[in-house]
Each structure stands twice: as structure tokens, then as C-alpha cells.
Length: 235
Image 1 (cartoon, rainbow, N blue to C red):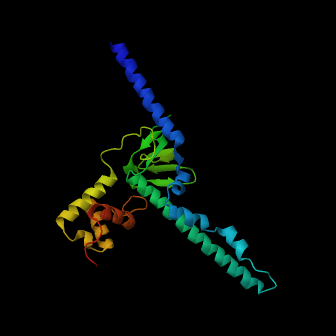
Image 2 (tube, rainbow, N blue to C red; image 1 turned 90 degrees about the vertical axis):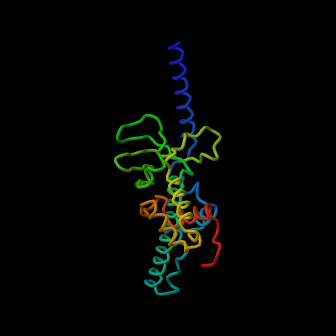
């Protein structure tokens, strides 16, 4: 009887591991996920954004038409401006992805390298992205002595496979709980200017906004509207 039970537990463990491997194989590398899981508007804007080389080529003017030095300077400035705009858009899309991971709207899997190495993909807890440093080029994330490589992202709401369980202690639940408590304490909470109400939420949680930790004004404003509804009066 004990042998049969042990075999059953081993089979269940192997099935769970295979399910996680299937999820990992079909997930999106994090260095692509910021574009894959972006909003349609962001993807359109990114597709239309020109990089440095493209702007140089499109802005180039015949040397005979104008002063050569001025023409080169204007072309270079136009290319640098386009690059800054494109980089800012990429940064915004990456921030949105980190917010979604922090709020458990998306799930990340990775191969643990520190403090001990894993041979199979492990789920990265949503709270890990509170202070995680992301190397987008190498698809790694690290925080507080932990390092994951080959990080991939999937949408647990879209997949038909069994998703790993989301921890009860999640950052999204902490944000929602703070908003509900503030709304109970102050009936006019949802009517306050968003910058003020968002700051109140951060103060309630006891954390400041750090890139990717889900506590940006943009993210908190969405949760306030989702829980409290739109403003009842004009501010």
C-alpha cells in the first residue's frame, strides 16, 4: 500500500512538472514580452516609431541644397530626438509589463541561479518584482540575492493549461485592500485628484513608487476606478 501511494505521489509530481514545462515552452521570453503583452495602442505607436538609423536616412538632405554643417547637425538632432522618443516608449511598455507581473495579471517562470540552482523552471512570485532588477537583453531578473535566468512570461487567463497557483499574499490584493480601506475611511476618497489618492494608497501600504513595483500613479488610478468607480463629482 505504501509503495503504491509513493508511486502515485511520484506520478503526480511528474505530471505537475510536465505541466509547468509545457507552460514554460509556450511562454514568451521576457525580452520580447514587453512588446507581446503591450496594449494595441502601444504596439501601433512602437511600430510607427523610427529609430536612429531610419531617421538619419529619412532626414538626410542634399549637400548642395543647404549649408553642409547645418544640414548634418539638423539631421543628427532629428535622429537623436526620434531615438529618445522610441526609448521612452520602450521603457513605458517595460514598466507596464513589470506592473502586470507585480499584480499577478501575468506570471513569470525562470531557471533559478541563486541562491541554489534549479534544473527546471520555477514560478517567480509576484512580490519578487517589488524591487527586482531586470536585464532585458539577457532575460534575467534578480532581487535580494535571488537570480533567475531565461525568464519567460505567460498570461494565466489566456492559457488552457493548468497555471501554477498564485500566492494568496499578492501585491494586487495589498493594493486593493488599501483602496477599500481608504474608501471606507473617507467617503470622498475616490473624488480626490488622482495624484493625491494615489499617494494615499502608497502611504497606506507603506511603500514608495519604484520602477516596476506596481505603485505608479497610472496603475493605482486604474485600480481605484475598478474598485470605487469613476468620480462622482467634478474636481
